[in-house]
Length: 556
Image (cartoon, rainbow, N blue to C red; front, side, top):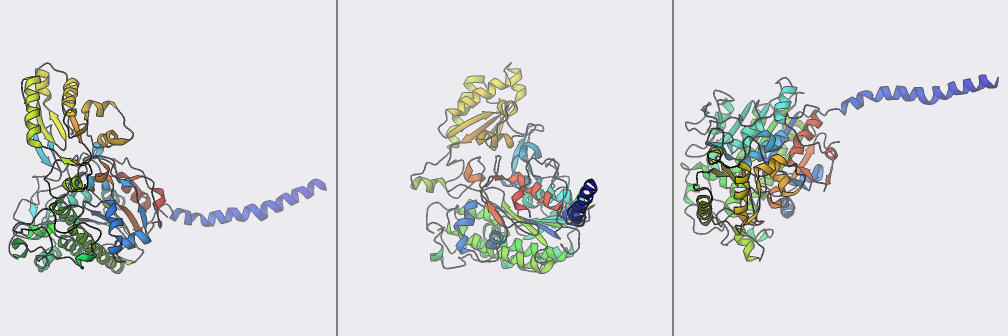
């Protein structure tokens, strides 16, 4: 009886505690399956050209509730987000965001670079196999063919059997072509000149859609050819330096860099639409066109996820002209904040609040104007290119008897002529090291690495790690130069970028919308982490060259 009692008791315990749990697990399984993927109706990728992370914090009190603040407060903020390669410039930046990898893998090693296989200078998006659509100029002869791997936009198209749409938009051609990937339904960019139109390439289509032609003829572009004054009282712009200073560039026809800006070519409604790019109105024009694309292309209107890639380029033009500490940059970001708010309201209306996912980052940051830094006693400076050229030429002639041993210099890299080196019965590694040693003696140089070092080592941190991630074995040079912190090869007004230094690598990364956790992190994240994070959210394949990893804290 005792044994029977124990068997009955055991059966009762199993029935009472474990069988219901098994049924409960079975019942919950569909919920677990849902967590494998989130299906927003639309993913919106936003890149703000030349946005430093500290713009987000410096100007935060100037922002309204519906733009940057909405993303920070409702979404996830990666505060320690960096580019993990150099050069930090627009072409590689946009490509790395969307491919989940670096130039070492995706092949876009600069905006322009020396093609050592064909002995020509190339542009990252140029492709003369295709013709311009929407303009009589050659500004539309573009394609993504120099990008050697897939993008997140490509993988979404493949995952949806090409049913999900991808539309990419930017003032700059490379800011649209590269994020759109190889399979975009359309990529549009702005051609200024004397036309002032949104255009594309025959890579995507044979003629512009009616809605694009209607937008081009609507007068919206012409409405942005106007004088530029601060949106608010300039005395409230306490987050930037004095307005009248010697560290800012000038519009043609202006004698002062201070507000208001009323150059003749800005006011002339029939000429030089290119100047719109160098004002915050270029961002407003981009937002207008993106919102129109959202409506006309019916993005996010069904259960198949679409992708809208937007790049705001005017921030870069303004930064280059006026510098990161200027009133002009502050005003540009205050106005961009309002443009973002307009975009998010349009998304709420057209797609539905909570039905779309957004990420926002930058393609690079920027340095404070070195001539300004010098006045504050911070180490900074400029490269004397003329003196450098003469000194280096003398070294080449003395050491090798010819200057022809160097074929090209671009993106702080020297490309050597390997045929001449072999004909002189020299060793490539030795020549690389000799030239590296020569440049280490130049005052403005911080450090130098050789192509041989990039091949033979596996760097894990610091400047060499960043350089190696930007080093493509088939496309990069033989000697890599790193300027001292605070030193640039540029004119003495305005800001620039491109270096592996932290002021060029630290950029914002914000996520918000469907499937995104609310919060923030100060753990290091890197630009190639964006694409696999979005891929994980959507439950689709990672881009083919992915080296980044998903940021798990971002995802609900």
